[in-house]
Amino acid sequence: MRTRLVALAAFAALAPFTVALAQSALPTPVETSALQELDAWSVSAVARGEGALPADLWSRSDPAFLAAAFDKLPAAYDSPATLALARRVLFSGGEAPRGDAQAAGRQRFEAIGRMGAADQLAQLVAGAGASATDPIIAQYGAQAELARGQRNAACSRGRSAAVGETAPPFLLRLRAYCAAASGDRAAADLALELARAQNADDAWYTGAVAAAGGAPGARPPAARWDNSLSVQLSLAGQLRAGPNPLNNASTLALVALARNEQTPQPHRAQAAALAFRRGALSVQETRTILGATPAEISSALPPIVTAMRRITAARATAAAPATPVAAGAAPAVDPAALEAAAAIAEVLRQASAPADFHAAARFFRDEINALPAAPDQAAALLFARAAIANGDTQVAQRLVTSARQAGAAEAALAPLDAALAVMTGVRGEQATMAMQRRIDAGGASGARAAARDVSILAALGAPVSGPVQTFVLSNAPQGGARADTGAMLALAAAVERGAVGEGALLAAAALGQGGPAALDAESLERIIRALRALRLEDDARRIAVEALLAGTPS
Image 1 (cartoon, rainbow, N blue to C red):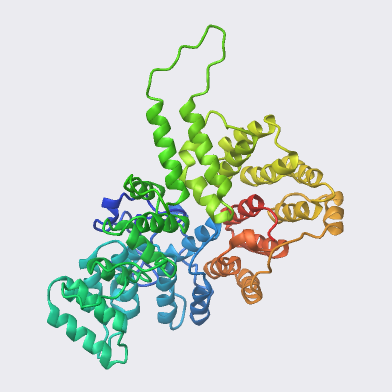
Image 2: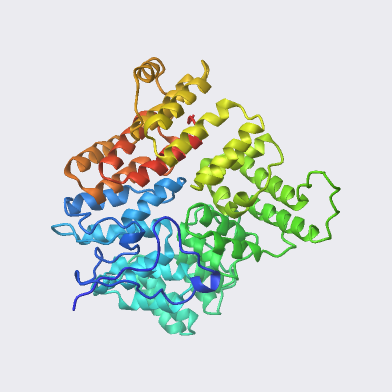
């Protein structure tokens, strides 16, 4: 009987792994059905009920074009909405496109590796059947296992690759690392010699393999953290890091550093925070890693670590018996809660880039949702924005009301009202009122910024009256870069053909690393309308909310 595997992970966020779980065996498949034999296309890391695209997502696409489209996806995502869209399409299994789809299948795995989804990538390679022995796919599987701290699994991936007479340099270096780590220096030297014979000699790897095998040279090389193999070699050889070692680190390398207890501090905390910002680590796992940062480490720490420590200290102080409240007096606000609110507000305030704000909001989501009060008006506004960024509609509505009662300016509240209208459905009177409030709050100086937000609401289906049309015609939306022209033209063609997977890929490529916060109004409107035409309504809403929260780009 032919079967189809659906792995346990979800597309919108990594499953909440603890450090121990992340380094354990792969999850057991949770669903099977009689569809087709597993390969590089049919294997999936998200179930249909969790948002996977339909099985025919590639049926209207040319495989050669898909290879180019996969390659257009960014290596890092500063936009949670764009990342969610990319993960949804990349993690969805389906029928292979007609024609020679081998190159495009490889590009699918490479795109997942670039985004740093180590756990999902490992699951996909494990379930890819005969495709797992493809030398390119095997490389990505090995890199994912190295990022997960699974050396034996990574070495097994390298050995099982069908390389023929000439192995790729990465696999030879992997073999050298595996041999050195197991104490087989002769096999390690042989693998490096084969690499030299292929003109793939690298002095750093030679020195790092020697150090990992317990025989470092007189002057061992500095640690290199550009990929997950170099990370594991550097840690095994106890190589010292040079200045700014994380500057060239891939997301998989960051995951490897974050999950390894041997990574020197504060580099481990920095790697964990950056991997979390890029969506490669869950909140739970990131909290576990950051919480293990030694107390004596106090400099060069990510802001979220400092805030965590303030909150923990405040809660410890609050454990003392409370002073009784006099009869008829209003109960005092818990000092620990106020200190927690102040610490979180400071992190949110320091987040100059939308990606940093979204990461901080997601990290402190539970605390924000439980806050009884804000320390000041500005903090109330920040918490409202954070709740909207997290998609917590009811909490966001409460916090927007609180910010309005605290005297926040309508000009600052109007974009939040518009985002709430998107979250609750831009239809009818509510959408009309949200549009009008946004126009009124913009005033003369903010008319063009208001026009940008109005155009986003219109793209989502909000009714556009004559006065609204006149307003937009008189106040052209300002700010932002134009999306990649080629990606936008190809996106329109994909929509016409009903090519769902291709259209989702191209939308993510058009949004780029910066996401909706960086694009102009026309590009955003076209992308949102395209996603809605492909019936990707939830993704269109996430993109719209993110753009509204970010405000007018420079």
